[in-house]
Image (cartoon, rainbow, N blue to C red; front, top):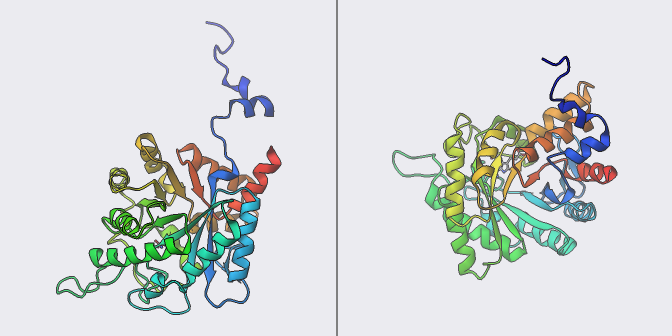
Length: 332
Ligand code: PBG
C-alpha cells in the first residue's frame, strides 16, 4: 500500500479560484425575493423589534424599498398588508382600497416590469381573530377554520390583487383546494395571466414568531389544524403534488432551514419551480446571535441562504434579499 492517499479532494479546495470553479451551487440576486410589510396609515416606517433591520413600511417608504429592490436586481417582492382595522372575515383584504391592494398597485407603478410584484393571499393579517380563514359556527365545529367558506374569500381576494396589478399571488393559507379555487376565480374574471405560488408545504412552525409582531397579528393559539405537522416529511411532498395538480405555477416549502429534507424531496420530483421561504424566526436567530458577537453575521447569512439553494430551491424569499444582493455583486 502506498504511503500517500490515493484520492485527495483537498486539491480542488486549495485556492479561491479553484473553489470558485468547482462550486456546485451559485446564488444571484435574481433568485431572491424580498418580503415587505406595509402598514395602513403609517407616516414613517415603523421598526419591527423582533426583526432588527426590518420595518413596517409607510406607502412612501414601500415605494422606495421596491425601487431599491429593482435597482439591486432582486427577482421580486412579496407584500404583506397591516390594516388599521380588522373584522371577522378580513373584509378589507378584498376591497380595492384595502392596504395590501393599494400597496400592490403602488409597487407595480414603481417597479414596472423590473421585478415581479407578489401579494400574500391569506386572511390572517385582516381578521380580528388572526386565523388564516373565516371561523365555522356549525354545531360540533364552532371556532374551527371553515375550509370551504374561506375559499370564497380567497377567490375575491385573488381578484382584488389581480386588479391591483399583482403579477403573482402567494397562497399561504393552507386551505384544501385553495389553488384550484383561486385559479378558477382568476380565470373567470379574465386574469388567466396572473401566476400562482402555492405555499404547498407550509408547516405549523414556531419560527413564524417574529412575523406576528411584523403584521400586528391578533392570533391566540396556533394554526396546527390547517398547517402541516413538523413531524411529517412525506406529507410535504404530497401537498406539493396536489398543488401542481390544482394548477400551481410554483410550489414552496416553508420554513426553509429546518425543512431542507422536504425541500430536497419536492425539488427532486417537481415539474414546476420550487421556492423556499427563509422565515422571520430564521432571520431573528441569526441577527440576535450576530448582535452578541457569537456569529459572523455576513458569513452566516450567506451560508444559510446558500444551503437552501443547495437543497433545491430555485428562488428564496429572505429578509436579507437586498443586503445579500449587494454582497453578491461585490463578489463578481
Ligand atoms: C400567513 C403567513 C405567515 C407567514 C407568511 N405568511 C404566518 C403564519 O402562517 O403564521 C410567516 C412568514 C415569516 O415568519 O417570515 N399569511
